[in-house]
Length: 284
Image 1 (spheres, rainbow, N blue to C red):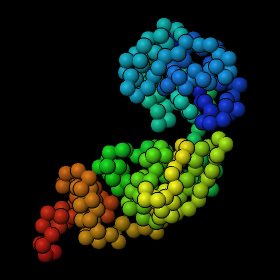
Image 2: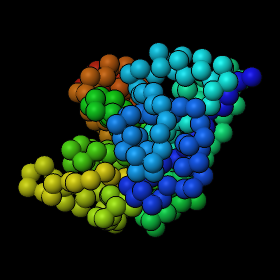
Image 3: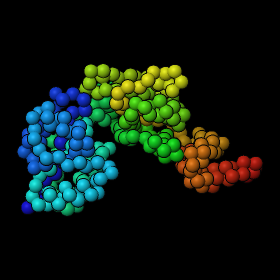
Image 4: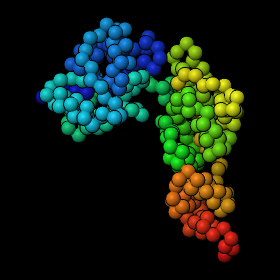
């Protein structure tokens, strides 16, 4: 009989947030799969837990996943944790969960802290509908594509970002999305926890690479969605062409750039492409 995979949420900063049920799950399982065994070992030592650890992260998820599922199929139970918060949320753990379901291995969960919903609740931003966007790509082309895709998203959007990437992220967002309300939530549940409610333009200035504040800590960025009155048809063909040129500058092929820009502007791809490759051609 197969064992079971137990997802356990761990503290995102304050060890006091570790639930008694989470501690029990770790004490009673056969082994623990962790994103970073060094981080998890500190947690286990704090609670006096002694359990075998196996690493499971982005670059070994295939080989390690096979080891974990083999042990589960043999009847062992495994607790899966990430460095902080809920495993399988913007985390390679989603792959092992999917694999277990496919193999008929029971999956259960001990819910715990989550930076996504914690930051949203603290921000005061509209929460009836929201979209979790995770981390933006470090690749300039992919980042521009991502931002272009969500330009007209009307739901509140939530992002994660590392401090050294925050200034560039805010500048790119302001350039792509225009002025929006934003809540910058940093160091959740820790000593220097802070919620900064401002606008994208002011946030970009606050953390500007040219003389702005140096970001410190882990950040969750919450941005309001596009105005409900926004009308894609208000974009001019010239504006769509500028969007396409920006994408091309980031490395996107001309045809795909025209397609993406046309979709964002509510125009026909052929019209945008024609103006892009032959700007002197008169409109019919």
